[in-house]
Image (cartoon, rainbow, N blue to C red; front, side, top):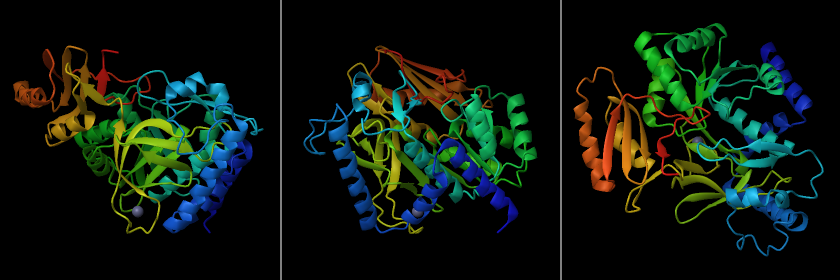
Length: 421
Ligand SMILES: [Zn+2]
């Protein structure tokens, strides 16, 4: 075994030791679990589901009168806020950690997590990095806003041990981007993990001002936002490495990673899930035994692939599409609804359009387009208003070219903003 890998393993051991996690053990478990048969995986999750249901019944005020799992009501974020203390299990004796969800809009949800749930989250992430070539100890760059980067002392130490450098996406201007590129090169970064919209901006800069070589870079993992295929191609060609998607919803115990064949596999032993008739992803976290959430309304909509078997031989189910947060919808004057995916499909064919944002209120819809600066005649884009008029009725339709986008506080790109709220 190579010496650097011993040091790398040492880092993970050290982290487990300091934090009380068992990431190393669970990662090993997941590496084996991914190749188990579907029946064996089902058996594990059914057993865990029965356990968590019984535990909830006997140790939480919220679930004490529940009869069967099927009869449970959907647990909304509002219900969690209203019944926070009733969801805490009296049998769980270890420390509970408050955590906020990184929601793009509205008030973030505060929930409680356990050391076991944190362990699974990290093991799931490391599994996704390993597909991109990650080995313990490798230099990793986080290119993200607040939901992936925490800046307090504890997290700084944690990042040091894990060998992670943070790159904030708050101000991605040209001079910052160049500094970032130089740092990625000089630090011999092996893995980049971050928001696709931020990576896309950096990639576009590289295409325009490069080439820049990243000989040490093994792969890039996109997370926390929906990555379009245009994003993926742009980022991959700029950095000359493969780009993999990672999807997580930590409060729900959801973690999915893309395999070598770019199928998004859901780790189905950490969460029990179902889809309602609108494809809303309702999830029970099977690992968090301290703050029990069953049939939690994640706010994500999911489409599973019909593909039964992946060439990679992993038996974790394949997510075909994360349709996005449910609030990524536009509602017109007549209450017709259109999902952000519609605009994605509408604009992705047009190479001159780099990014879009839709803002609407009760009367007006405004389409913000970020387009190639060489496009002098912006009336060319009016044709899109005609398409939108066929699908949505508003009193007023506006088109704004190359104005700055509104960002959420954590710098995630928001495709749809409902200004009526
Ligand atoms: Zn696969």
